[in-house]
Length: 147
Image (tube, rainbow, N blue to C red; front, side, top):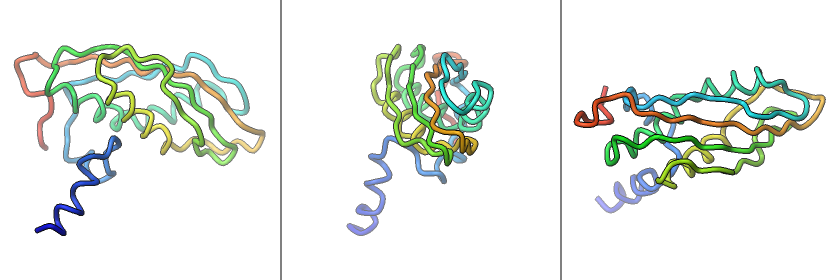
């Protein structure tokens, strides 16, 4: 039993969900919309937005985790990221937190660092993006339902 706990505990404490956890959670009660506020460098704003929208389920997971405790939580996160020419994200930071739950921002930043963008051999790209988070469900309903 201690071995099982030792294997489970790091996953339970992680800010970013392991890849296998997201499909088990249906974060349908929280909506996350992506906006690109500024882009400088090799990639264009539509490319940045498309890459971020592919990860929307992960950002919804970050948000849905707190909706169970605070079903009316709404707001936006503003993040600044650097995209390397190979499409990886070597740097990401939360620049504005419009939510009252810092764990959502930490989770979103952790996920953003794992995002993949198009390869842009022309150089580095920096972008500022906004993740707008709004609840969809009746606050009396559970925020996260198992599939």
